[in-house]
Amino acid sequence: MSSQFDQFYNRKNGGSYKWDSSPVKSDNLIAMSVADMDWPLAKDIEQGLMERVKGGIFGYDAPPANYYDSVINWMKRRHQWDIKKDWIILTSGVVMSINVAVQSLTNKGDAIIIMSPVYYPFSMAVVKNDRQLITTSLVQEEDHYDLDFEDFEKKIVDNDVKMLIFCHPHNPIGKAWTREELKQIGDICQKHDVYVVSDEIHMDFVYAPKKHIPFVSVDPSFEEFTITCTAASKSFNLAGFYTSNIVIPNNKIRKMFQAGLERNGASHCTNLGMAATALAYEKCEDWFDEVHHYIEDNIHYMDNYLKNNIPVLKMTKTESLYLTWVDCRELGMDDQALNDFMLNKAHLFLDEGVLFGQEGSGFMRFNLACPRVTLEKALNQLKIAVESL
Ligand SMILES: Cc1ncc(COP(=O)(O)O)c(C=O)c1O
Image 1: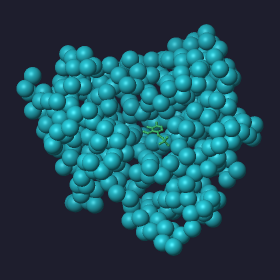
Image 2: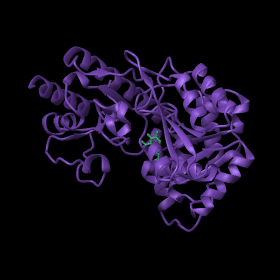
Image 3: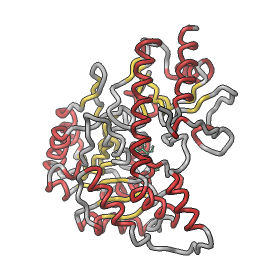
Image 4: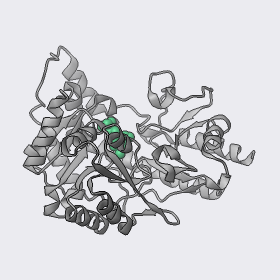
């Protein structure tokens, strides 16, 4: 059955980072890098924004009247997560908010832990704010990764770690953390007074039988030390609207975070971003269910394709995200050669695994939020390139 997501939209030379920042320009180059989707807005968002823009006044606005309910109801409906209006702080992006959390809750020189490989702005938020970066390496099993809890706790104790920046679900490895894992992580952080900044921006993209469980919801006591970062931006392809919802149940932490935003003059986000978020959460659930399903099919398609046609490349079990993490180490190339091969032989612009930490050496991250034709073409190009070796 055909889907609205089968439609191909040409983004080349349209100003998108994903398509236009490739170091190699060739006609057959396919971009599967930066985490956005190659599809336009859901019709109800487009329509709602047109109405807002037409004759609209764009001064400094508070969130629209239905804003908070739209967020609260989405979290309740989709994730059985009860949040209160007072807990939500609107910001202009998750990465900015992680930086503000680092600045507000820790001091220069403090140790902050991340689980590597992980979304690279995490390490940047630590290092660029003059904090000490502590890394626990996720352990690669056959087709997935696990946390080495012993190493995690030891690093926390040995370095007097003050904060964990946590990725849930975990970009780039596609792991959807289980309740048991979350509880164990939370217990360790609680025991050693470690704040948890839980980046759950990809929360809506978890595939059955797995289910997203917000970290802070695992135990009421986790509310005392957790900041949860959410946004509609990944789920509805709204990244360019720079709007996110940071959920902080604890009063003291919320005030510290809010003060940090104010110190940076960063307490506002855009009228259209707020409008788009409310429209998405209120009116576009069907659109989301369809795109979720479509991407899940893309994941299965790629998994089967690699197994049947390019078995030398191994896809990590993709329980979540619209990104997939592929082990290319059997090609026997160093990272520079691997990236050159992808760009110049397979004509694919991907995210290099090593960007996400040394543990990502020999891996590539593919973005599957694209029409099936794009994926088919990309995989055919990849097959031809690998066969030519
Ligand atoms: C884990 C994670 N956090 C945050 C972001 C970006 O968030 P924002 O655009 O709100 O800064 C991304 C984008 O890819 C991401 O993968």
